[in-house]
Length: 496
Image (cartoon, rainbow, N blue to C red; front, top):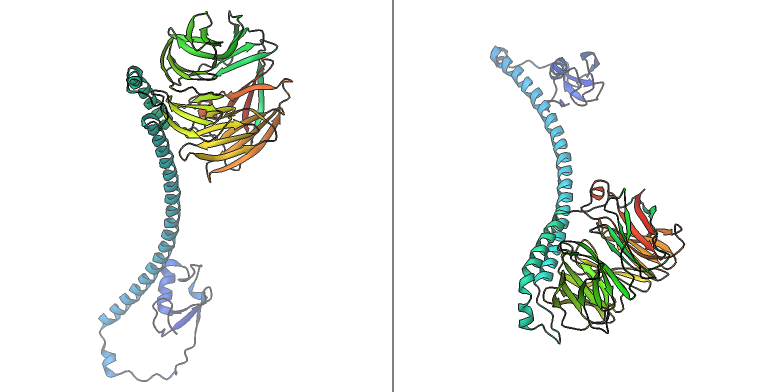
């Protein structure tokens, strides 16, 4: 019978009533005197709990050789030391085993944490690199071959303003890179749309509307050719005023920086005119100005598009560049970097560099009724009929398609590019989600029939920006909608 402590044959074996193991009595008594516990399972143990075991050896022990009778007392001391050493080694073995278990658990948790962190860093770096590559490609890419290449003389004329626009592009890129707009929303959490309130109703019916997020302003033109300006710069005290305008033939509205201050402008037939009747631009008499798009940083720069022809880059009241080709267009949108202009036409969507007019990309998407860039920098959203498609410009392909039962009137996307709101002609708002974890799309997670106004909505757009304090602190996302009777409505995301 071997001792569980020393591993040697026990000369006076005893068994523990607590663990059932066999020990050399002398060793286990020493252990109990120091710890008071069973050496194996650490349960409380006393000497009385030790049960002697009768040895199978004969009680008649042979006489020891004479040499054993003269062992010096020093050997006895060595034996005692050896016993103490055996106890200490046993204790150390137990401690080592426990330490190994704890270390294994700690290493497992550490390895799991490192893997999660590495994956997150990799995704972040990939997103940053993709955005940077796209921005560089937009700003510096060679023009695609076209039948009407920009001449060297035309390229030279871009020099005075090219540097200014390139610097603004780099500044916008750095701002976008530093911002990490996210919603306080987990993948499994529910999100809905709730009505937030109504504002103004200056007219009975409107023909044109322009929502300007930068200045928190909404411009509306009535069917009787009156124009209203609604300013929400102070949310607690919004202001509404009428412009001194009664001319017929309003085709578009916008807000630009003119003579150093924000100025409403009207696309009146083939002219762009300020609210004080100052002519800013004229296009061909047989055409009209269909849209006015302001640069996201340099508000003195703006783009105007002809309904059946060219697009123009303007600085205040001066035209600095016009596109070389006539191209019928149905919608346009300016990228967040202020350089890339998307123009929808009957045969597809073209992406131009506004500095030299070069065509960087063409998307095979005919008859788009509305297009908008997402704030993430690499999505372009386009609607046609009852479908909304999300293009990934990094791959030049459709990343996702949303199909409704009715025709899409308008749509909006939040600053984090993870929630899309669509409004169709059944008078219904639908909420669609993009979940970055797993890169999953979930369509129609919520729908709301608009009952707050009887007339249909004419447009809806995001009213929140990534730099808004309410968005950064609380994730508040507001959408502004304007009905055909000019009533302004607020809708907000609600996290359940």
